Length: 192
Image 1: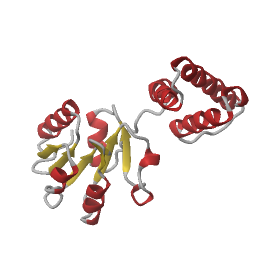
Image 2 (image 1 turned 90 degrees about the horizontal axis):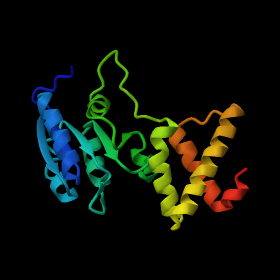
Image 3 (image 1 turned 180 degrees about the vertical axis):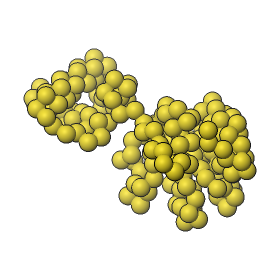
Image 4 (image 1 turned 60 degrees about the vertical axis):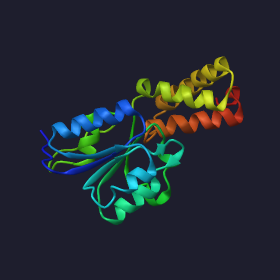
């Protein structure tokens, strides 16, 4: 088990239950938790003390990227832990691990503190686990719930056809989101 005796872990998260859960987990591993804090201003106060940080990308409408920039300038390991996709992260921060909620606390800790000889668990990237996010993305594109569901269905049919043709999608999430955007632009019937 990972031991973090005395390591100062900054938790920047505006959802209380998630912040509290992460704080309890890192405390149980021996870390000294800084925060949790829920605003960029509060987080900035801890940037000079932190040894590592878990950062939600959007804090009550404000992006956390200035905090990430400051921590990276100090060579502090960080992990983005958010409901946002990686494409919202600026190019200068694309190298930072971006874990999608709800990844387990262990996945977050392993991404932040990789152990020698052990590969950190990767966030789930299989189609069933991505369906809620895909449906949410469709609902953001289309106001009609039924139309959004039909769009998701069409995207899944196209994904199955592409997989049967031997297509190598890379990241399943990015691939499905690309199909969704294309289908929404072309119209669901033109995706075939």
